[in-house]
Length: 298
Length: 277
Image (cartoon, rainbow over all chains, first blue to last red; front, side, top):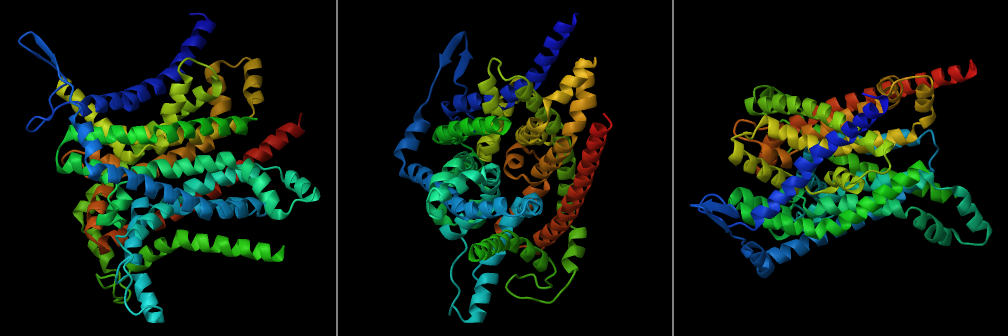
């Protein structure tokens, strides 16, 4: 084999191995999900879309699951609620993380690694356990209520657990590092002389901030928001531990259809619609991920 | 300017309290003698003693540890391959699809990944009679997720590395494999190490994928913790949390000290090499 052929063979393996892995375990499963979502439910198992009995091929495509998703107010309401909670979480994360990332990016260069490590350290600790900790803090007889009662701020415990408040608090808490890091990455690369120029030319600090800093950190804002928003739409563990009956989210509905009702085609249909809801933000995220990679190279 | 600076410090302080308060709570509560969070029964180690006899937690931990180690290795290998191909080849057929598939698991809700992988594995099983749900299927699911993270970590390091070093090695007659093992790998070694740790932690912590992909007899530690935490506050979970916090802090702090030292040494060697030219 010539050297050129060897090199070509090498590059094919390099791309091929991860590619085949992703195609067979990421893309192909989605097609299977779609296929199962249009199949009918038998008594205990779903029936194949394509069947072969006595030389007769039958194709049965059942859109019933999608019809009930569209008609049943419960599903529609749950989808909307999930989008709403996820959007709210992303917004609150942004409001907390932006000034925070800004402060780190503008702090002395020798302190930044330590500060970033302090952001990442909780992230290395089990996420499940950190969610669970909020149960102790927020319970009716939990740490917060007892402290407030002892201080005399409140006369009786406030209901904090199993409310939209505890749910959003938990999601903000969990996902905020994903907002801080991309924001920090764009803010720390910013050329500060642009701000000086704006101030020299008579801009107020607020004007300089909104017209220079914010636009320059746009890719960080978008990447961070998508990293928070998209997984929050389908979040299961946090609503399960911190949410309540009125905060039903779509991840839970999918889980229940699958594990509770054993209705696999319905669970698959719920998943397909969820993918359709996040496909636009996902494309957006991919585009900006590619752009910020390109920026990093430049 | 002064007031700006103090405001910055106050804001950073508030956010750090927010980030660390739950962790501190867990550690303190693990020493609470009373089984209720509502009352403080004094300091005690009795829950640690009970944990040592908790067979469910211990076998779950063993399983999780085994899966996490394998996941970290397979994710790092696949992630490094993916990062290298994305870095080397700016243009190839299906690159957009490739990038999309690498990035999507970072944000894709886990219930979707878990469900789709499970439904596919079940369809395969109906055709060929394998695989049974259990260890291997959980490993597969975790690798899918871990690979995406490993790719991001390794790729960002590759982008910092100057291509001239690899070119120099090539000019001096290195074969592609030699270039990789003698030049590229040492330069991205630290990133590979971080990726290994990151994917190990991800796997050790995952509930949703494991729940979909586990079979009878393969209950990982997070599944056990989750099912107990669902029912309410449980002292056994507090002790697991405190131990996790202790192990993670020691590991992360010492790993970062070691990495910083290695980095410094490498920088010194580089500088020495330049000087001697």
